[in-house]
Length: 378
Image 1: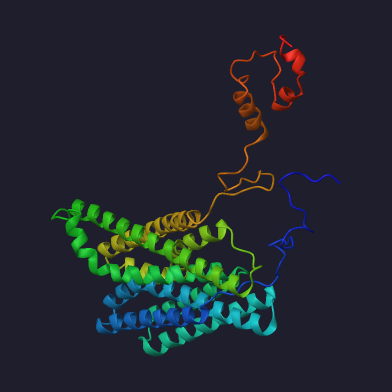
Image 2: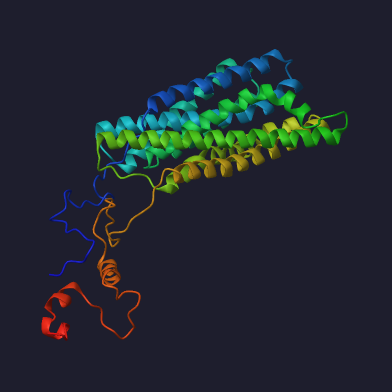
């Protein structure tokens, strides 16, 4: 059978031809899931404690309702991330003990989210004031944790781990960025007029979203890179993640923020309505904050996705197909047949001066010429 040039038969190659897509049917676990779960639960506890301190320090009634509405987005976002991180750690334990199973993994993720949600709701009911707003916060927080656990039931655990890492980093950054809001307001020209304050607030929000998206994309890319190297050290035949995984991981924090906004507007509708009904200024504030949260989620989604995708693209090298001819790295290698013919023609004087119809003279033809015919004097 004729062999095609540039191809090496599977029997003669140094390594067996193995399809990376079917080397291992077992899913790759998310590394560091237990640490992520502890950090996310700690962040949820911090959000619940700060919300409780803000509500209890205010007078009961109108101020407590307003502060509860302002604190609800932070609690819901933290519950989403905590539910996903805890379910991710539980999924790794189930996979290690009982093997791979999509149904078992999803049920375990839902169960872990329910445990986190019920614990958070119980803590809210026991430590907050016994009001109607307390029940709204508790129920919405429990629902967010369960939804976060369901998200972690996906088969691609490293991508979910990257989303949790990036989202947790983005949430911490948003809280830390609050210390820089006042200097940025002055930098963007906030003055005495209402319009200047609104314009400065828009630029501050966009700056926060841009930096948060960059941070989220870099964290997602770094986590997936670490997970890939860790998996390859354990099993060199582990299939690597493609670019859609990096794109989804970078966009994940923005998607979680938008999902948290949906949960707030559905589960916390009664609390938002109560806060908006307090006064016209409160209604304007709630509308403005809701629009700002949606814009922040969209900006973080696109900026994080582009950042992770660009970072992944910079790690890619040029691709070579099997039909490409092998190129020698030795500069002293022999030239090609065309180069030899041209060089021979140049050496014998027939390359440049010979006509198009005249044959080229080779060294062998010169040796075979009859001496009597070559020299007329003889």
